[in-house]
Every structure is written in C-alpha cells, then in structure tokens.
Length: 371
Image 1: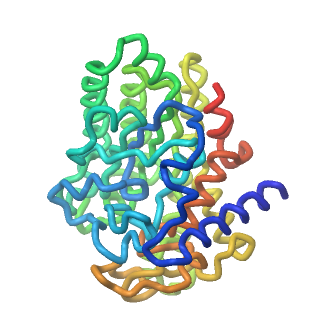
Image 2 (image 1 turned 90 degrees about the horizontal axis):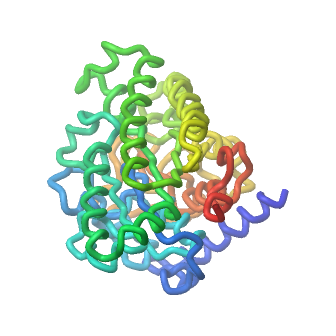
C-alpha cells in the first residue's frame, strides 16, 4: 500500500509538471534535485533512454522535432517521449543532473563528471540489429565509447580517484527490445528467425550481452542495473498488426520469457562470480504488466494506443513532425508506436529505485546507492 501511495504521488508530480505544454516544473531541474547519492550515472541502451545521441548520427531513428519533448523544459532534444525518459527520472531520484549525450560536442571536460549517456535509438545487442535505420551506436560501440570517455577522465583525475568514482557510480543498461522488434520479428529484413528458435535466439542475445557487461566491469564499473524487456506484444506498433488490435500479441510476449528469465539468472551468476560488484535486474516486464492489468490506480485510461501516431492504435506510423498529440498525455501509457509517456516512465523509475525484489532484484537502486 505504501508503494502504491508513493507511486501515485509521483504520478501527481508528473501531472503538475506537464500541465503546461513545453514547460516542466523547476522541482525537477538539475539545480534542485538534491544531494547526489552516487557520483555519476553511465547509461547504455536504445531509444527508450536515448537523450539525443542519434541527433548526431546519419539515422532515420530521430526524435529531435516537435511534438517530441512537448512537455520537456528544453523542448525536443532527441528523447523519444513527451517529457523525461526513465533514466532522466531515475537520475532525479538519485540527485543527479541530466546526464548528457556522448555524441553531443559539448559533452567534454567537467560535463562528463556526472556521467554520460551512450544510448542510441535502433541499437541492439547484436551488431546488425536496427541497421535498416542507418547509423546507431550498437552495444559493442557504446562500450568502446565509454572507454573513450575513460581516457578523457584519466586526464582530469588521479587513477585512485577515478577508480573510486567508477566503483561508486551506477551503470544502467537497457537492451534487447530492438533485437526483437527490429530484427527477430522482421523476417522480411532479417534472417535470425529462420536460424534460431525463440529460446536459442534469447541465449544468443544473453551470451553476447554477457561479454559486453563483463567488459564494462573489467574497466572499473561495479554497480549495474540491467533492465529486462517489457511486454513488446502490447506496444501500439505490435497491436496494430493484430487481428484484434485491442489485444496484446501473446506470441510476442511469450518469446520474451526465456530472455528475461535468463537475464535474471545472469544477475545471480554475476553476483556470485564478482563479489566486488553488485548487479540488479529491473523487472520491466512485471512493472509494465502491472500497469497494463491495473491502469486506473496509476491514472491511466488509455493503454492500447499511442498519444501521437497514425493508423490503427496510432501505432502503424510513429509520431511525425508537427503532428498534434493527445491533450491528456498523463492518461496514456504510450507516447507513440513504441515508447512510454513520461507518466509511465515515472512509475518505472520509481519502482526500480524503491521497489521490492519483485521489481528490482536482489535489491533496489536506492539500496544499491548506499553500498
């Protein structure tokens, strides 16, 4: 009950922040987030947490135009939502300023000390995932980009200080969604579904993911939040292809089980094999599923279509430049064909930060920050 009350308070805060289009309350700006609980946050992932890296790439996957960012203080920045992303909100809870995009030329010097965001729309665990969108920083490249940041940080602080800073900082990784919706589930463009059964494909992803996670550990990161994949069969894009668009695609959701269960098992394995570090599994699927099954307590009245988009479920064509979005954005779970609204992101961030082991396993992010 206490957690539900806190989540509702957070949703009310978001609603207040978004009540005026294009404005965000000063309660959540970087100058008022409170004392930092960790030195920095380093972010790796896809469009769910991209904060503008693809603006600087030759990519079709961009969101640096209105109405994206219509409820964000800085306007359209390359965030794939109406306001803040999951990592923006998690950073707020940790007392951190917004973490800048790696590709932004201004991300240098002291701007990197609070962390860097390497996430890139259309990126996947597999190098080929999302290639039909053009350039993107795939997982392997994001790890190399982090090592580039380390080279710059080494010129700014002693080796001891850098080691301590990395050990106390939090790394957030959110991958896998594109490996399904922009690879395995697109047989007209990718051959992976011809060669791999769903369990075999999940194991392929987990093996490749493990290599890169351990590479990040080898260069000094010690606190990892590994987000599972949400119920992709329920996003507007997938519902739009269903015979009954009001229903989720059960097959799509079912094939994610091996991946999510395997990632949770990997967390146990990592924690056993690397006692100098802490790995946490964020149960995105469970948190999203709860909102889908019980939307009213969270303030949602629309869960099956996007706030901005074209076609069935507003999910066949995603949000185009200067399209008119819905006005009651905080009642929508989905902003466009693929991505959550800020209101949904706020709930996901709160549950990762303060949730029980069913949300964040084996400990939550707030507890991790204290270690």
